[in-house]
Image 1 (cartoon, rainbow, N blue to C red):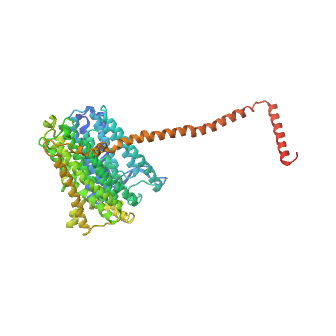
Image 2: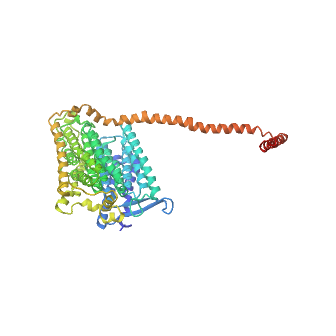
Image 3: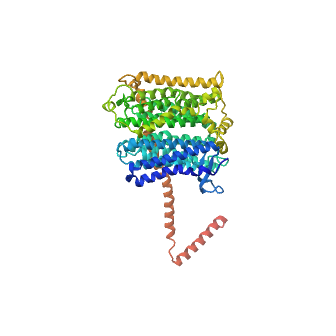
Length: 630
C-alpha cells in the first residue's frame, strides 16, 4: 500500500536542507567560519540522516510514497502537470547514495579548498549546496517534467562548479563545453517530454496513471553520484517504458558495451590522474547502460551503487595526492608516495581493485552481474546483446591495465620529483572520507552477491529482494514487473552454455576475473621498478589517436565550422533571398497597386460621375461583344 503519512512527510526536507546551505553560503558565507563549509556539512549531514531514516522506513513497512505537492495543470484538463515526491526502493536508495557522497565531498573540501587557502570559497560552497539540492530533488521527482526542471539545474550547477577557477584559461573553457554538450542532450530530453505528454497526457513515473575540470571534490561529486549518474537513474526510473521497445533496448545495450571499451581505451594513455578517472567514469556508465539494455535492471543499479562509492573514493584519493604534490596532476612527476601517504594509498588501492573488478572488492560483484545478465539474454535470442557482451568483456582487460598503471605511476617506484620526495601532509578532513569510502569499496559488493545466492541457495541477494519489495510492486516499479515486461514485449529469455545457468555464471565470472587480472598484471610488469618507462609510446600512431581522444574535438570543430556554419550561411541566404524576397515582392506589388488606385480617389464629384459613365459604357461594350450585337 502507498502510504501518505509518517516520516515521508519530511522527504522534501532532504533537498531543502542543501538549498538552505546554498542561500547561507551565498549571502553570508564570507562572514562565517570556514566561509560556508560548515553550513554545507550540516545540511548534507541532515539530508543523509533523513535519507537513511526514509530508507529504513521503507524497508520496515514495505510502503512507498507518491504524493503531489503542487499542480500546474489539473488532470481533468489537457495535461497532468505538477510537482510531487515519489519514494520507492529505487529513489530511497539513490537518496542515501547522493547525500552520502555530497556529505563526504563537503568534508573533504575543508582540506582541499579551505586548508589550501583557495579563493571564492562562499561561491564554491553555494554551488555545492545548489548542486546537492538539484540532484536530490531530481531523485525523488515523481514525474518527467519535474525531473527535467531539476536536471537543468544540475547542468547549470556543473557549469558553475567546473568553471570555479574562472581566472585560469582551462576551467571556463571546460565549463562552457560541458554546458553546451549537456544542453544539446537536453534538447532531446525536452522533445521526449513533449512527446510523452502528447501521447499519454501525463508524465508520471509510477502507478496506474503513469506510462510504462573544476576542483577535484567537484569531480568526485559530478562523476560519482550526480550529473553523470542522472542519465542512468532516469533510464532506470523510466524502465517500464523502455521495456516495451525491444529494438531500442538492444541498441542501448550495444552502445553501452561500445562506450565501455571506447572510453577505456582512451584512459590507457592519459598522464594526468584525474583524466584517467574521468574517462574511466564514461566507461563504467557504459556498463550500466549495457545492463539496462540487456534487461539487467538490478545489475545496472547495483553497478551504479558500487561505482558511486569507488569512483568517489578514487577522485577524492586523487585530490589527496594532488594536495600532497602541491597541485601537480601529472603521474609521471609522482612516484614513491605509498610510504608517505599510507591512508591514501591503502584506500586508493581498494578503490582501484574495485574499479578493475578484482575479487572480492565491490566492482567485481556488480560488473560480473552486468556481464552475466547480458550474456544469458544474448544467448537467449539477441545477437546485438552478444555483441555488447563481447565489447564489455574486452573492456575488462583494458580497465585492469589502466587502473594498475595509474596506481604504479602514482604510488610505486622512486620519487621522480622533489615534490614527490617530500609531499605535503593531509589532515583528518581528507583521510576520514577516504576511510569511509575505502571500507565501502571493499565490502559493498556483498550487497548483492548473486553467484553466492545461486550456489548456496542462501537469500543473500539483498539488493534484488529490496528492489522487488512490496513498495515497488504497489507502484509498478519492481524488478519483477520489469522482468515480466522485457520477457513479454522484448522477448528476453535466459539462455546458457553447456552445463546450464550455474555453469554459465561461474564460467563468465571466471573469464572476466581472469581478464581483469591479466590487464592488471600486464601493467604491474610494465610499470614496476624504480623508474618506469613510457611504454605506451611504443603504440606509435595509435597512441597519438588515443591521446587525441580519437580526434573528437577536431571533428566537432570541423562539423561546426565546415558543415554547420556553411549550412547556416546557405540557409540564411535562402531565407534572405527566397523567403524574404517573396514576402517583399508581395508587399511591393500591394504598395504599387495601392498607390495607383489611390490616385483615382480625387474627391471631385464630376470625376466620379465620369468614371461611372465610362464603366457603364465599357460594360455595355462587353455585353455587345459577347452577345454578338456587333
